[in-house]
Length: 390
Image (cartoon, rainbow, N blue to C red; front, side, top):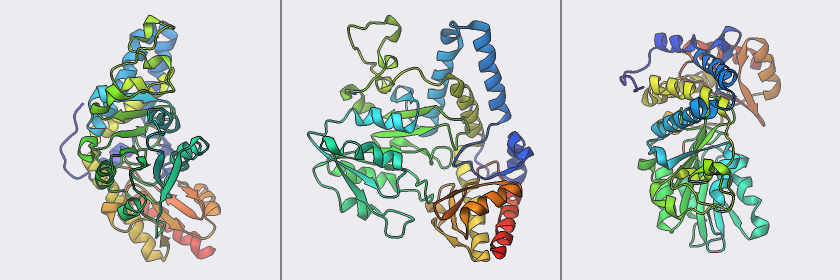
């Protein structure tokens, strides 16, 4: 499947994509950064998974399931501009980061740099190693929206093993200048590990242009494939030297040899794989990623910029504080609004037929390419009305 022409996505086309997601039959969904909705194609894929399991039993592994897992890896590689041998499968971002972390010898370089706005999964991965001699340094935000490259530079030195941070912050939607951070890390002889969970499917990603060493992402959110399936990219030049200290039988060069006496790791990124992956999510994940590829990542990025700009415009008109970048070029698919009683506001919006989310003190709105401008306007009308009542 190839991406269609890079013409801007019209309201009519967005509405056509919207109709492919049954969730809109009972709610106006603007919460893709928490969980991407299931498309009709995803529903059909789940039925295919059920049928394959029922029809084949164990032979489904080599007839359908392993080929489907390869398809999922292939789709993700295309989405980030990587070779298939540079990508492998994991269960969650936590397990993916654990596999990556296990390849570093922190006796040589004991410091890891993270951002204070990163999702806790990232920071906790290395804070949990402090009792083993790993030191965690934080690049800190001054405005609680973005972390500037200068904040990373202030904490870099020759003891840093790697920077580990987000491509786009879950808490504000700020898109980090990853290439600049990669150059900074490499200038200090360090590596860079990037969590792209809130980037792939929102904005175009090319790991070669970004020059990152590791990149992780998954199907739960913007790829509309569901939980249980993530991916690890490893820059090709690093593959041969990776020696993970946590592993699973899927990491073996020939897993079906069942050789328990020797560990011969795969020559590809599969050497970072663990145990049996989530097969059902491979089915829905392929369906979700195919939709993203069909719509086109460039076009999706432009569409999301337009929709989030509409949220920002309406919020400014309504006098609501915005805790996300105002410049659309810095903003992913998330707009954070400081509203009165955010948790109650989200519940009242749900009663009115809108699905959004909240984080401490804030309401989070996250439209995707299948949302329409009317979706945004009706949501903001409801927010204006509720805030006037507060």
